Amino acid sequence: MDTRLKATATHLPAGARYVPGFVSAVEESEFITLLDVSVWSCELKRRVQHFGYRYDYKSRSVTSDAYLGSLPDWLQSLAHRLVEAGCFDSLPDQVIANEYLPGQGISAHIDCEPCFGDTIVSLSLLSSCEMVFREKESGTKLSTVLAPRSLVILKDAARYAWTHEIPARKSDLLDGCKVERSRRVSLTFRNVIRVL
Ligand SMILES: O=C(O)CCC(=O)C(=O)O
Ligand SMILES: [Fe+2]
Image (cartoon, rainbow, N blue to C red; front, top):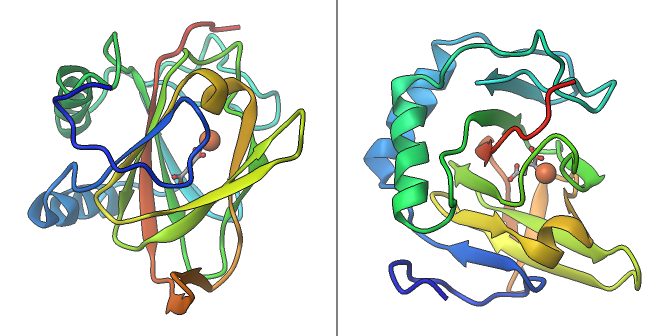
């Protein structure tokens, strides 16, 4: 375990790590403002913004014309912080912002294996939500709550042998208490390893 980060063991698969409070509340609102002055894409049920490279959801690939340019400064500095914190070995060069309104989620998936490197890091902003993990082989299910400003880091088995998803619902049960969701935005950092 990297001692530079305080990590909390929750119900996570092997290879996953949870880091609460990676960014401050002031940074969180700055990031949201920066995203909201940019153009959200409505190509999916939830709104998204792609940085670095555009990921093609239909062909499940990063195509040769997908390069969008280097990450904007604020994402580049977050990318450097993730390397300094020991989350990534090399600087991530692709980021997807996902916006989830109450009732929206993301279905069970493993991030494209040929497209992206061995580390996926997601920063949660604004609202908490439950993330569910399922082991492909056994069907074993685990779930954890992602708090705003936290990181979840997926490597090894958590990256390749377990799917992750966010159930599409308006509230979550946290410690037996119903907690209504509000708007959540996540920033997922990756390294592009193959461009078709
Ligand atoms: O919203 C999240 O935290 C997860 C997003 C995700 O799994 C993805 O973009 O592949
Ligand atoms: Fe994912």
